[in-house]
Length: 297
Image (cartoon, rainbow, N blue to C red; front, side, top):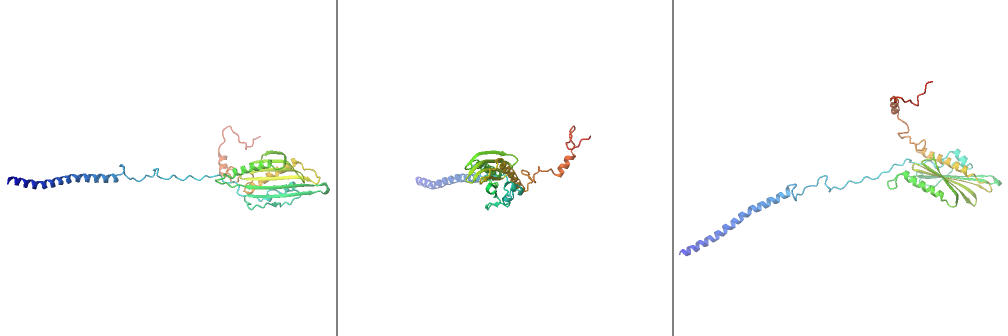
């Protein structure tokens, strides 16, 4: 009986002990789960901790760099060309091409704002004594400033250089001579040579001049036909140089300039009234004498 009671007691304690052990295990596991959950929630919310998803600041490297400013070039000085058949005074035309119609023959270009030309033909027929032939042509080319091609002045200089080289390398030219000219725009060159044609011996003069963003090419030639004497090359050259200067002046005048290279709106053209007035009030340094003050006798 006692053994049976002990077996019953062990049998009853067995299930209870098992249940108690399981309860203790579950109770011990609960804090671990809570701690794990708490750690997990803190890792994603607190900024500055490892693994935090903070927003990039304004100065972070994720921003795109600002676009580079587009390149700029100096604006073209001259905005238009003069009427090509009026670039030379009638007096000059009477000297260079005395028998020509002073109205001239205008070129066929449809871009007169950028390219134009005019020519005059003169034939002084002296019958059996022969005749004197003269031909004059003025071409003007204007360049606009462009970011891809450069300033108008630079483009004009390149074209000017090419025109001079072409004149020196003219087909059939003999005794070619070239000289730089002063006082004719920003740069100018006169090229003269002899040219033999079936009509006679020609004396060719080509003057290429650049003033700011405009290039002027003036061609002038003469010949004695039907037995008349060949004109003097030096005289033709002098006439061509004079005409080129007048053409440069015409370009400047068409754009509101009285003389080449001087803009009426330039601050250095004339001092303002206030500046001159203030300057007159300022005392001169001791020991200095103004050149504008007349000396007393």
